[in-house]
Length: 354
Image (tube, rainbow, N blue to C red):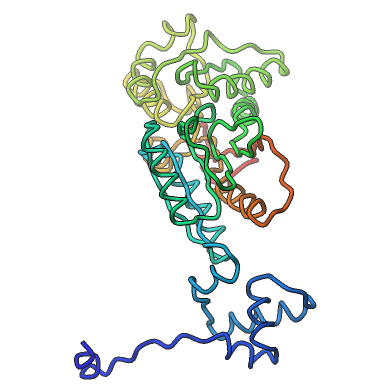
C-alpha cells in the first residue's frame, strides 16, 4: 500500500494540530483547548480569536480527545417509529444541519412500534454514550413506546406525544388550518368544504378547529359535513367522484381544504374526471407540503408546510442546552406552519405566505 502511494506520488493529508492554533493565536495550548471546547475563564475576545484562527487554518479537533476533555461524545441519537421517513427525514435534516456547526454527529434508529426494538436502540445509544436523544414520531399524539425503558440522558420530543414533564416540539396544526381558511376566504371563496384523515388523529381535530374558527369569525359555517377517511390518494379520488353526495349538498363547494397532500391530489384527479376545473370552479389547499406530491399535482398544489426542518433544528438546539445543564422549561412548543402558494387556488405565484 505504501509503495502504491509512493508510486502515485500521493501524500497523506496532514491535520493541523492544536499547538499550531495556539501558536498562531499567541496563547498557550491549554488556553486554546479551553477556548475551542467552551471551557475555562477568558475574555470573549480571546475565545473568539482562537476559534476564528482555528477555522482559518482548518483545524479539526480529534473526536476522541475532545470527548475525553469535555466528558462528552458530541453525538446525539434520533429514534423514530416513522420507518417510511415522511415526517422524520425533514426533522433529521434540520437536526443534522443545526448540529454540524457545533461539531455534533447524529445517529438515527428506526424502531416501528416494537417495545423490544425501542429498548435495544436506547441501550445501543447508551453504549455509544450519546449525549442526548431526540424522540421523533409520525403523529403528534403518539411516540415510540418507552414505557419499559426510559433513556438515562436528556430527551427532547419532536412531532410526537410529549409526557407532562418532557420537552417537545410540534407543528401548530390549529394555526395551519386557520391559514388555509383565511387564504381561501381572501380569494373570495365562500362555500368551503373539508376532507381529512381519520378522526382519531389529534392533528385532524386541531386543523379542523382552526379552520372552523376562521369561518365562524367570518360569519360562515363549513360547507357540508366534514369527510374523514384514510390518508391516501384513493380516499381523495373516491370522495371527489361523488363530492356533492358525500358532503350532503346540492351545489359543489367552491373550495376544499384537504388534510394532507395525498388526499388533495386524489381529489383533484377525480374533479378533472368530472370535468370540474381546478382552480376555476373549485380551489384546493392541501397540508404537509410533501414536495413530490405538491409539485407533481396538476395544477401544482397550494399547501400548508409544517416546517419540520425548523422543528428539528429547534429540538436539537434545545437538547444541547439541556446537555450543557441550562434550565429548560418543560412543556410543548408549537411552531408556526406556513402557506406555500402554487396554482391549485389560482394565480402563478410560488412562495411562502405566513
